[in-house]
Length: 146
Image 1: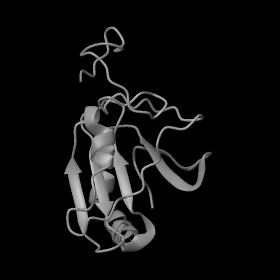
Image 2: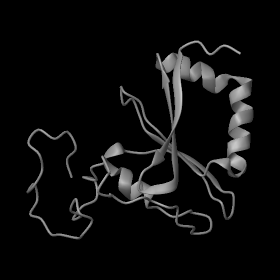
Image 3: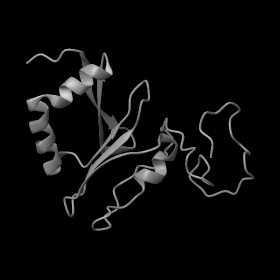
Image 4: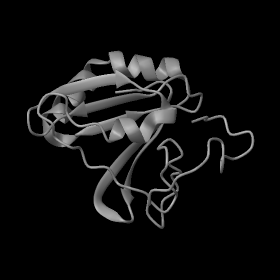
């Protein structure tokens, strides 16, 4: 099978949680990625993954045309596929299953983390609550405004 526009697929294991895996795929264009999603093989892969192999999928791209969250609840099998604002990513990831209330695991910021959770109001980078005056502590020119 050929995948025009496909560059690379890899699995990344989080150093602070060995049970946390992330799949990263790279494509030459958004069009190539859309073609893959119309492929019959991909549809079978997606059906297999939704039966327990994958619980959550966060989709973004280098152009940041949009972000999506795909989730399959391991308790009630409710499937969610929704767009979300990247500036609110941590808030969205902390949402429970709307059907049964299951709380999806969320790996908080760790010493080896390269994530910067600027979207959670009042949360400092060390994970402890703090109170800030509006606009205080934001990087100058930061595109994400609270």
